[in-house]
Image 1 (cartoon, rainbow, N blue to C red):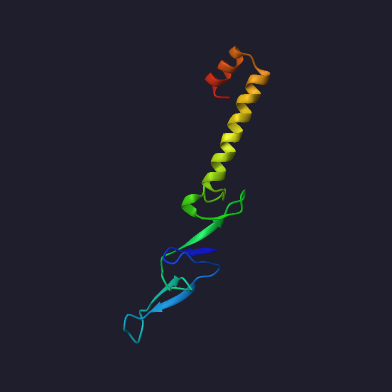
Image 2: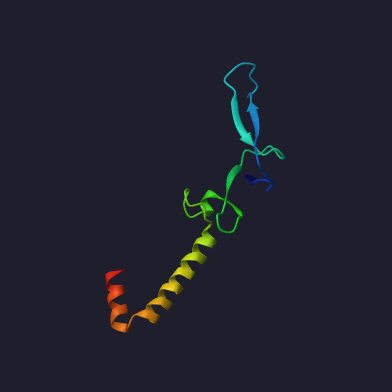
Length: 104
């Protein structure tokens, strides 16, 4: 999926455009563009594995994880709450301090 930053259109496949710069022979410049407005200001979108929404790469945690920053933050917050609850449930104060010092 791609999105045009000029007209905000989302599309599956960019159009191809050849800029001849007034020449009849090579070299021509070829580039991908928005099929609607023909702007070359397009970016690829990636689907978040958790929420299913599409985001540009800079709004994803890493290129391989494919999780959006919001979902990443929510999961990390939930995990931190679970760890804190579990520590309080199963360990006394001295053990919790030791665990934190050792960064277990």
